[in-house]
Length: 188
Image (cartoon, rainbow, N blue to C red):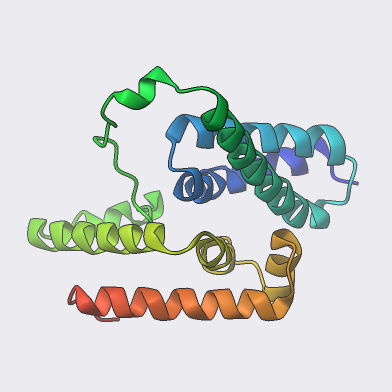
């Protein structure tokens, strides 16, 4: 049985990564925030009495289902109602880094030159763009395996597919990212 503190600590540890993953998928900041918040509430309400070791996999599955549900609702809503805000231009001023700079690295980055800082930011932006361009299942598998650091079995359970499918999706994502980044002159 997870204690309230363990549940709270778990939710704090996954909030930013879950938001990024959701944002890459739905491409709407407000919707991503809502989906992550709803997923956290569902986990706390329905599965708060589970052992702490089960929380990561349960949360990933709840989040994946919430994202799927969001797309279903969007499809129905778009078929029935034309939203007036869709006629306005999208606000692309907010940027999100794929590899968010950690606060613990601030001291080391403080000695970085302006040129190095700009170059690093450009590379990170290029990586983020290529991750966004991956097909949805490849992006989901890639982010779960390499961003969330889940193993193959956990990723397969969270995605509702076989371990072989996860390996295939990850392999294709890695190769697609490598090709795209190499074409942009970014080498590993």
